[in-house]
Length: 147
Ligand SMILES: [Zn+2]
Image 1 (cartoon, rainbow, N blue to C red):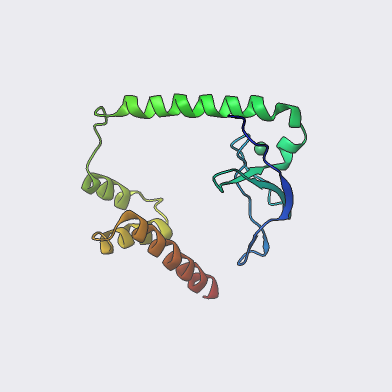
Image 2: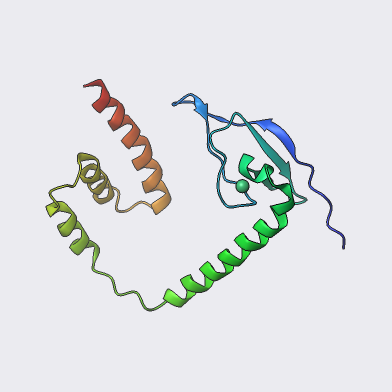
């Protein structure tokens, strides 16, 4: 079965509402990202998944396939490395980590705040915990900046 071509278009990049400039977005060709550009190059594959190309990759379109192959090989190697770690990780406990981190003199107020949040939200899933932490941290940073 022949694969159909993916029509790429130049589209407006979403803007970070808080910071007021375009977001840096992942590039599917080089695994890098766009450099906060207002216009990005995107297409949609046959499964409806967005394909994006950064401005650095657009400079050398003849390299698209070589870069895709290179990134795919790196991902395969990475997957093998991850599988090779299975059953071999002997880590200190979370309690050990907390104790060591609490005694670090350079632990910032933000780090201490994050640890406190982890303890308070211990019953939530990681996803809920991270979302709550991110939102609360932004509020905390705003309050801190206002002081
Ligand atoms: Zn790229």
